[in-house]
Length: 82
Image 1 (cartoon, rainbow, N blue to C red):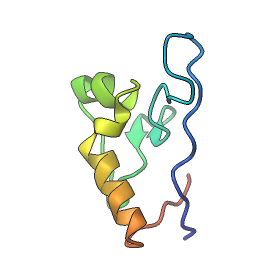
Image 2 (image 1 turned 90 degrees about the horizontal axis):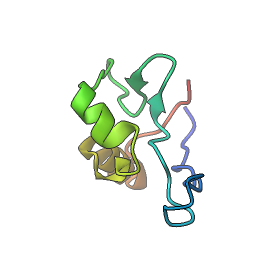
Image 3 (image 1 turned 120 degrees about the vertical axis):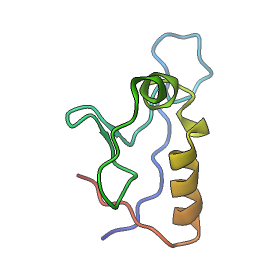
Image 4 (image 1 turned 120 degrees about the horizontal axis):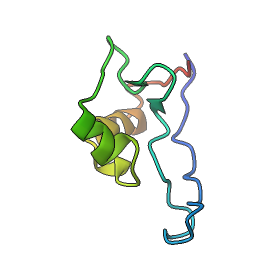
């Protein structure tokens, strides 16, 4: 597996967000409707979690996202893109 740092956020097309602010989580996989930061098993978030974090600009507040980045910075996890 290759260690991949989090991608740079995309600029929101609505013009209301700050430049460089991501509009959704890069680890949310639309086609499988799953979170790809979860390496062991499959995580299917609740509709509330999905709306609050995965598909919103507040994804960085997600505990799974924060834990993944923390562990990645420590070199404890790697991300394998699907």
